[in-house]
Image 1 (cartoon, rainbow, N blue to C red):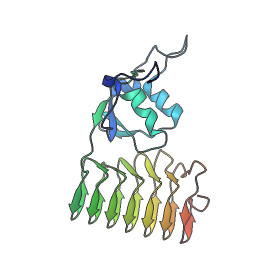
Image 2 (cartoon, rainbow, N blue to C red):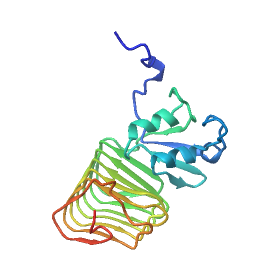
Image 3 (cartoon, rainbow, N blue to C red):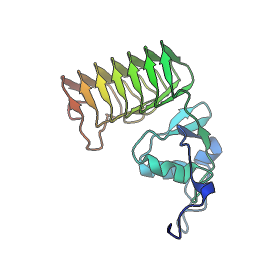
Length: 227
């Protein structure tokens, strides 16, 4: 028999979103559900877990494509038992096959997708890729956020001058990989197989790998030497 505390059907999330979008009030508003005598915000709770948050306009985007992803809905989904906030679910924008180039000007989320062509992320835009296959270069300059996880990319991958989080985790990347001049948030580059050079230069703070090394067949440069 199921355990006595098994979730009821209405609390089971059948289709996981790509991310959760929070308002300014949801993200920074003071809460009273913390330990006695303490008032915490959602921003503080997320930071305590080390989760990356992307600022997009007047809202905050929390991608599921990052470590401990299974805990994120428990805090941010309105169906969750804890019910910290009722974050807006952001659905994937591409789950099938795209033949040809993809230009990202807003928020693009690829989940289980196949892209046969280059991807270019415009300044201020957000790219989230999970469990996908890309045959072509992926290039982002001045993006608000850049997330690529559990995917295969046959072509160069480069994130330059990203204004928010960079997460490159658990991928197979064939071609040069560059994470350059990231600002404000330490890029996470971990557990990748890179068939080519890996270059991290000018990022402040410096990239981390959470002690999960990358396998790199080419040379490592700059801040990525120890990753």
